[in-house]
Image (tube, rainbow, N blue to C red; front, side):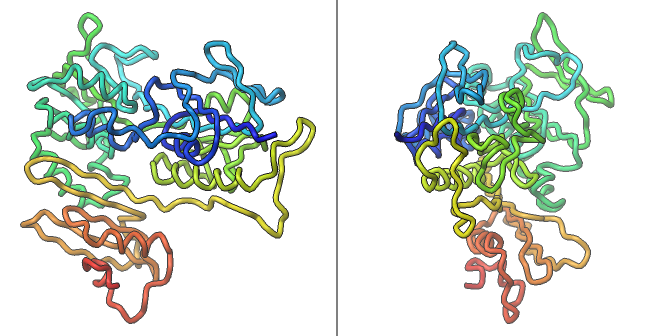
Length: 413
């Protein structure tokens, strides 16, 4: 008897696993699995929604099916329509939910008219339906998601204001100089940028948003408000089933939860104290888990423990991902951006950077001891492949090569 593998979640991680293995995939969204990284391009009109669909899975996806309960004793998943799906192995790929900031005028699950999260294809299509030239749009959040949304809205002709509570845009990925160049580019697209400003509330009239209030009393008129304040792992299903949950669903190196028959991958999973929330790690986790499941013994009986490999042959393991962030911003002069690792140096680190103000190009790497620990590139990404390989490999840099070679187009190879 073959192992019945059920995957809850049709996002990047779940769809990747379904490409590798015969599974029953329960997708809550009505759309076939798609590439979430390209949502801003769909919003901007660069791609039609069907273009971002992920390659086909090995088995049909059950769309519009929401899992509501896990019975670990019976090994079944209960769906909102009342159906039960039995499993030998269950994989939770439930992803993440957008963070709704604690604002006056934003209470409960129902959002005022004109207020939109920016997480799903439906969010994207709904935004496209209401944005037209001249519409006043305020984006709350100046991270990767907020910058992408602001760029897309500006390309549709909206009057866009981007608000960021922190000191600079994309402060998690970029150093101060790179962030300043990014801000300059975003403003060149017609986006009004406000940093170090905290949004305190929303003004409404007849159930529709009319303005965004800042903590200093300043008011930004708005017909559309986009919430891009980050995401948090969707863990309710796991928590209610009694699985170990910290920030995400806690998993080991086999992506196994505290229940040996249940795994978790992607945005909802927490490995070694870290939740990634990025496509790269989700894909890598799915690939490792596919290998884990392929090397396990056939489906166990109800009374048998989960199959384990001999200790002398540990088999496939997930040891973490070194994730690189890439972004392309449109406009008359498009801007490419890449960032990885620690872009802000510590005392004692070596820094190599090259700046070409006339071309808006900036390249910087941080070296700690004999290791490349991070970097950021804007405008000129010719060296990013070599830099990424050196960083991901975590190998000692050659003593004989000057540090400047790291920023040459061939990475010194």
